[in-house]
Amino acid sequence: MIYSSTGAGAGAGAGARAITGRSGELATGQRVSILLDERLLGGAVNSCGERVVVELNRAAPMPLPLRGTLQYLSQQGIMRNHGSLEWSELELARLVTFTPRCAAQLLLCRERLRAEVVIPVDVEREDGSVLRTASIDLSETGALLGVGAPLELGETVTLRLQLSRFEPVVVTSAVVVRFSAPGFAAVHYVEIDAGSLDRLCWLIFHHVLSARGGRH
Image (cartoon, rainbow, N blue to C red):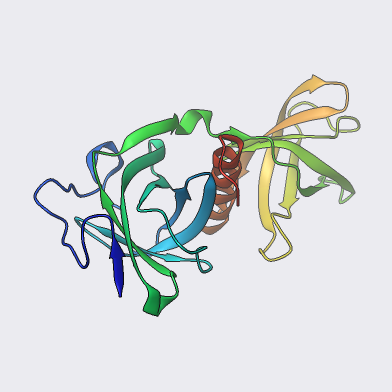
């Protein structure tokens, strides 16, 4: 059985819009979040067009609301789109079809995409010594670390960021650009591969949305 706010098995309708606008179209496999009331559910795009089918990471709590908000990361920043939801009980609410009601809106510019994320970080210096510390906040271009001395301004280091116990460690070279306070060093990433950057951005993305009222 199909559940829908527009009628059982209803199509996109003349008023529905593809998710394009400033963000460009979503791509199959792209990671997204759906905000249901105050609950955030992560997933990936299964197919997209006038409607977007999202495969959730886990089964959604039933019954689902008939409306939700699709949120995702674009080149511009965090985008959101309000719309209606359809799902099939045969798929145990793992596949959700989202029909946008309006054009995507820019929620937060990419330049401001920063979150207070505390994760373990190993800082390897050029002499081979390793400082074990933690992040204070993260962005896609750098981090604030809970370590100051003996680092020096302009020093190049290798960072190993442990995003979670389920994710591979992100390794990046970085340079110390400033000391914001005693015991706090700001670093700028010098080199980071695309896969690691994607996982880092996804972590920041979820923390930003959670801070704005959603729960995992």
